Image 1 (spheres, chains in turn blue, yellow):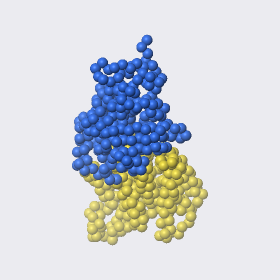
Image 2: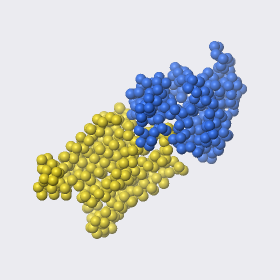
Image 3: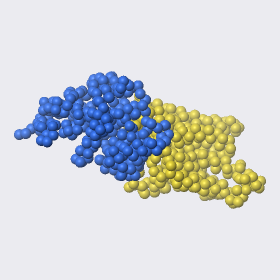
Image 4: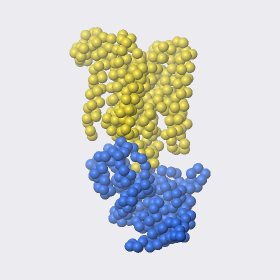
Length: 258
Length: 331
């Protein structure tokens, strides 16, 4: 569904992404993991078209994203940005409705059909009760759910999330991860999600891409990527990997055991 | 669409209009005013209304509309509560052009008079072009660059303006009065000349509310939501500059309306720019008309430039608004 082919990105003279190739099928969650500065956010921004790419292609069903106007692109691909401060005076309802932008004209006149889609999106993330609240009054977890609802409003087959669980309390991390997995498995979205928590990735992703220094070092099922060798090398830290006591997923324990 | 905010601001505008048409060196009671309006006036009330008060009031209203609407647009465009037509230099640039035109001795003919606003308009647009080019990095226009370039160019233009005004002995008084926002060139000619620019500029701004809403989330998110960010910013910037330059050209440099009116409207009626632009246009007209009424009566029969009133009343009022809103974090 989403095909990233030999994608390279430069910041000035410095190359920050090298020949990244990765595809995400519909109904699949692919997690991007890797140490800070590995290029996870850069990859997501480059795929979404907000930074120029130096080489390679991003495609969906044969369409090359570079060739598409922002409005066309926003019908294919929605982004949940990293925890950001939102303009506080907008209401949740106004914010979520902005997700309908790719289907509206320049003046942004929404129809009752658009409002119904926004209502469904808010319901999907269990935030319908927040509709009248101002964005500035939301907690971090609520804010992320509102941004996810806004992305769902775009009715895209592809969803990108940039560390949506960062800075969230434990219950929100799990809620949001479960919701994201459900969106892939149930609503058949192709989901690419940057995560810093390896055990969330192990538990909720179908495949994991390990990024180090702008390259994909390993790509595969959680069990194939979350090995002590790969992880300790990538993070420069000794790690233990054991089996989850109740589930068939690996569990990463950082640090030495002595 | 909520109608209460519109009713409220239109009501304020109506009251301001009535005050402006009745109050002056000669008081025109509402009954006489109405008579003159529907064509049953005395020669005196006709002359006062049609030749003096109405053109002046209309010009002041148009100026207020331009300042309010473009102020709201600039604040939204730069996501900066301090942004107004002066911040990015377009007002000072237009002022410089007008003073250059005044320092050349144009004949007092129709075209001689028209040359001043034309020059102001041309230098206003030239300023935008220069500031825009200075601020541009590749295909993007970082907001900080734009504001820095605007403030720097604004100081430059203001210094040149002062220098020119000190050098030219002739008409300094007139230029100074104009610069401070005295609608000295009122009359239907000025009104007719300003209308096309305003309809174009404010019309585009009134339709740009959705784009401005998206830009509040930052360029990245706006683009990810499907907005052509560079194109939208360019459209809003040019439309707002067009409106500002027209306003400055005909009414001089009038501060605070473009800053305060959008703030107050946002505080009262919310942040949705689809509403805010229109409300600021209406509110700008009402606020400037009221200021002009004050300017006419405060040391009557003499008048003071309306720019002095907007600053004298506007600055404390603005501080009061800021203080009240301190804990609401409406930005």
